[in-house]
Image (cartoon, rainbow, N blue to C red; front, side, top):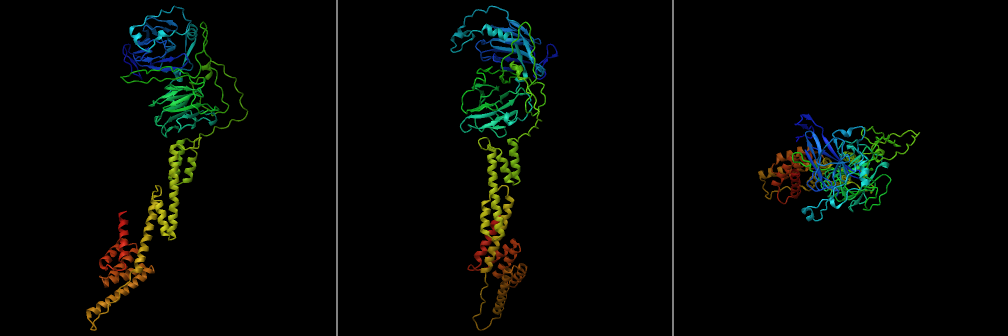
Length: 626
């Protein structure tokens, strides 16, 4: 047995680099599947537990196996009822295989192919000689265990394929190309003209029903999140559930991206499948109808027409190809074209590949070496070529922006406060029903909200300039939750607070009046009392002068008079008051607050300016904590 590495297998018995083989399986309807031959033994049969499970009833439970021996591959029939054939000859026991040999098991054709054969210029063909007539073995008796298994019919319950159909298939040329079934190979991404683009129409669930998506690129990802080309917000879908691709031959294929809930086409599970117009694709619990350009969808959940997909999947089971114990999923694919092209058994004729038809209105595509014309697959005669138009060809239209590009452009305009531009870009993301995708709807709501905040901030700025303090205050409160204009909002809020402090200080200055001079009751003059009276009179005069200067907005002169007053009579609360007002007007707010506090310490409780000064100090303390 060989210990082989996937990328660079090495044969330890013969000390040479061996080819990486692939087993290609084709059913009677032309659908093909590729299985990497990475194990030393592959078992084939209908029951679970085989490496490859073929579900047709003319395949035995354990039908055959492929084994690597001394650098070669042999096939061994495991006593199957309908037998195993190589190039039309029924085998008994083990028989060696060569690349290109055709293995026939029930309704399935299998062939070995080396890695890299898909890059050949022409198709790989296997020519099968006329079948030798031989008697089929009699039906063996069922074992006791088979009779006791309820509902598990074997191949004995079904007759083998008719002689005519078997000879027709065995006398035909099987055309197998790996590039038709390798879904993960790189593809060239191109835009498709909208008038030539097929569509996907949502049938269920009701909340998504009626939505249509034009397939305007040769590869589109479908899933639940916004980073997909087609977004379907449904919990049964994976983040990226499937992708839709157009092959170089022009056929469209849907491929499951290892989703959690899988994919069906026309009710049958597939890992990948070719689509025809009208086919029903179900991703999770979301059903979509695939329609080619010009086809109208009736919108119901009816099954696809006869032109759609076959009703029998090629392989229903899981293929356990283990490398170090890891499982590799069995990928399934379906060819939408017909079966193989029959040729006479005595004189095989090579299939000629006609040149591809020239499209009437390109965009021009670079040549694809692996491209196979549709007529070579279907065996039909190509229609006559249309004469080239005498009109000069139009230059290809520039590709339309994708949803992601629209959203990026809208976010750029939004960040620059260009709300009208952002809204105009987002309008282009509406689907056929006029609805916005989820990401675009959220961004549009943010644009509208910030546009309203900007209007309120403009109103607040105008009101402050006009001295309308209450109007400015209301506008700033309405725009307090802005995200883009936070700095502008904070600046206008500071201007509003300064205005409010000026108004309050002016009220305090108006209400503060000097107390009346005390006239001594005794007729006999006391020298100390006389000096105090003179000081109080001078203090009152200085306070009056300072208030007049403040009212005339001569704050520096007022500050000089107030300081003289405080120096003359340090215990005078009125001197401290006008001193605090003058410093506050000169934007020395912290120093002014100290004089206000000194005023509160000196002034009697019934002083007329006490409450106003207390309110100013409270506002000052609040502004420091914000």
